[in-house]
Image 1 (cartoon, rainbow, N blue to C red):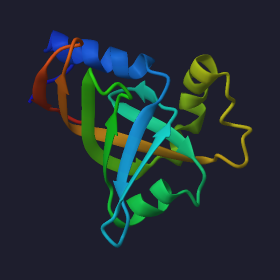
Image 2 (image 1 turned 180 degrees about the vertical axis):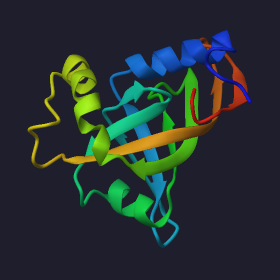
Image 3 (image 1 turned 60 degrees about the vertical axis):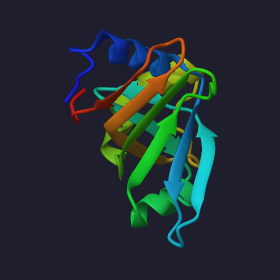
Length: 141
């Protein structure tokens, strides 16, 4: 399994993902239909984190099926992360400085967007000018 510390291409791609303004977040509805929407994110300690409304489609979907995919919004330089989503309410204080720095958004005082979802990566794939490859990832990348 590749880790970002072992593979410089993967490390560069994860840096690009972390710096991106947003990502596409894909989940599957209980009836099998896909759901895809852009969302703000941060990368921290080997996982992607988003903050959403408790009743958002993505939050309802992962209660039934935790598999999720995230991708950079650039169709010519593709980077896709496949992983397992989980609710992470205990991460709010730790993540708050990252969302504040990146988006000027205080997630600790936002009553509407109050649900933190972590996506632990299982696989990644890429092609384009950022680099190319396929990786099986550990949960601690």
